[in-house]
Length: 523
Image (cartoon, rainbow, N blue to C red; front, side, top):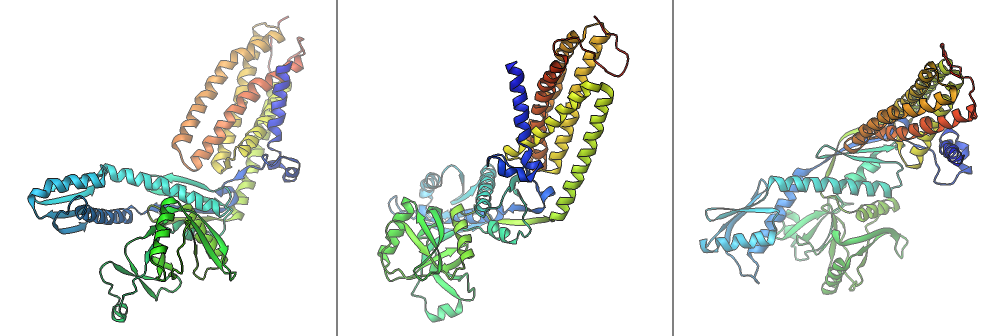
């Protein structure tokens, strides 16, 4: 008896999980963790973006970094300067000619030691070539893609966008789906911005003639103001503090009630920032974001403790956006929007209505068929079918799954399999009755002997669904999720709940079983 009570309690509880989805007003009676199921982009409307990771720009920057590291390694005074000539960077390969052939082996060993195993160093006469191998490029690309996905997710989550779907597609693409977002332009701007922030000293020794010509001396760059691109700031190329040392950033207000962005550094960044502001009091330093100067304030006093403040004529929304970008981290490579699609809420509503209508018609026909063929037992199968549907919706909602059109297809397929499981059990029961078994014995034998077939059919489908979930993406995963949940609830409702209802009807007695067709009943 206690097993039957547990089965009934689980069926009732699982059905109640779907109540907020079916009746919106029920949400106020439910705990917060029981909520309506999330609707996907094709049902709710919204925006879809396909982003490409710009690996060409990424490797160009890494090649420039190899150039600087090669130069620094050869000019290392502590280990001894190695004289060289013709240091070049072309097509991702850094080449350098060692003046003294006797230093060739020493130079190659130092570069391998300084640059690590990820970089190849080959000898061609007196020249060395430094470059990334193809396997290392693939590894860097895969790492950049995974980091980009995580950073995009953090940026979107920080904006409060609900139910985003962010997945990898292929080796260089990211698919972003944003249900309920009508205007994706703001989000496009945020997720596409590299957000690489650096701190540089301003070169105050630039002459008016140099400033007018725009030709900066070696080691200095003319960078435009973000708010006024026509105005250039001469900054030293050397990075004093990198934005990679940032641990937090928040939008706030200064003493004049103007929006600013506060920053906090880790221990390394705090030490460098304190050193910068201590050694260069009354000098200007530039805060650079993606090659543009946010502001170039004068250092009035040392700033220890690793906390700073960025001002630049921000609006409140601009300060919040910049704080989100800095807090989520810089993208390892630029992202380019190569495809954009917007699904209107009206189209999504039409799809939902069509799905509801199609599902209702299908369920009604199936239930009518079960009742006509199996009479009273068909009623039990129909009750199990409805409980199964409610449990699929309820469990999907609690787990945070997103319902899409492929997901609805998964539910429809599951309901068909649930009906099939009941048919298998009832037909085995019919066979037992034809063979002269009593109704009670026929029920026991019918359910028991059909169990193996039902389990085989559902478990093999579950394995296929798990494979789809593991290797699929986007809508395919939605289909796999609802199908997997549906298989588990099908086994519960068709094997356990149906048996409980049949046993309750039989009541331990040989009651009449009214199937369609002649049945030779035993004693």
